[in-house]
Image 1 (cartoon, protein in one colour):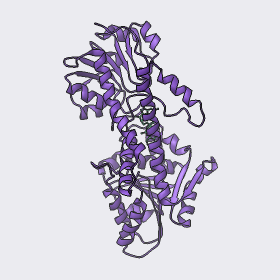
Image 2 (cartoon, helix red, strand yellow; image 1 turned 90 degrees about the horizontal axis):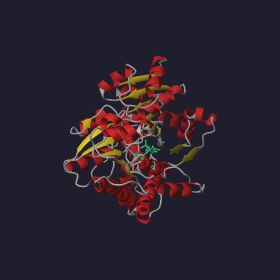
Image 3 (cartoon, helix red, strand yellow; image 1 turned 30 degrees about the horizontal axis):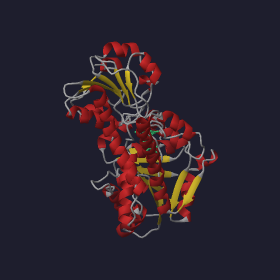
Image 4 (cartoon, helix red, strand yellow; image 1 turned 180 degrees about the vertical axis):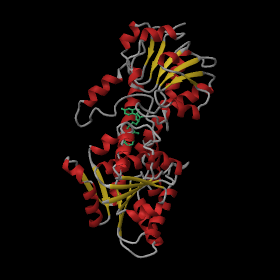
Length: 440
Ligand code: UDX
């Protein structure tokens, strides 16, 4: 089978490379010529473990091709995946202009049966809109299927998530389209991956419901953390005690500075917007967003409580990406916090294993550092924001001797409070008791 994937961003490229690995002929299309030229050289323009190898291998095997020609991508394929960006607009709704453009082009170019699949996270009703756009732009009448096949890839483990998903969701408007999609995902059938086959709007809702539910779990535990701080409880143990109940599960109950990344914030805002447009107020999604927005400010308050007036202070920030194992800084809590600190007159020394260069483009006043130990030189406090492995086992004696004051603010609860107290730190974490003596 030959498929095309339109858009070589994160989702598009992982989808294209993984289907090629399944033995499918894949054409990846992007209108960005530089990006396509880079990909043809086997270079992936972002950091995702294993992806560059997969792209190179399948490109060399001739199963993965790249083009900037949308018409060619449409002509070649039986199945066309739309994986273009749907950036949020100021009101939280998704900007669908790229999706619309692809749909119009597919319509103009189509000469035989095709299945058009949305992979990007799109508002409920988008597949219907695509159907109408294709139909009204068709230069010759032919039938086609429209499918919603949402992705659930996590950055940093996207290939594993694609190859061994918990489930595949296929929302289709015809039995022909279902049959073709099932054929495409056959390698996963062999692994007994559950495939949920449903109608198009249901599949579109499943995507939002899943992501916003996970975001809600995080906001819920962050709210519990804030309560724990007030009543002297320990959120790590609360999370453990809750998570052992199989109905609740232990995942996504880690308190911290709030969720970031390209999906949760955007999808929560989009769901609120979809609710408004449909005449239903999404109260839980609104609360999830509100708690998350507040959580970042609370992290800044923690820093102020520990170091006093921020003006003229220096903070050493460990981690800038929105989570470990990615260079992605979109909606990263670390950058939001760094920005607030700098606005209040702080100098922020920072290090991240992958995201430093990108972060410097957004916050050029950050002081870039070589590693964790360089970062903490002469600082009034160390703030750990992203739990990269290399920050989990720091040489604490070295940290203490290099920093000006032994204040350690751990926004990911990586360290053990009694141990940090023993090491002589004033140690602040999230939803747990602060330990040690605050330096005068
Ligand atoms: C997420 C979804 O997991 C994925 O299914 C979807 O397709 C895209 O969005 P991703 O954004 O890559 O994936 O990262 P994820 O690992 O889910 O983490 C999202 C954010 O939540 C990060 O900022 C992370 O630090 C935070 N988080 C996660 C917590 O604060 N606590 C947790 O317990 C889990």
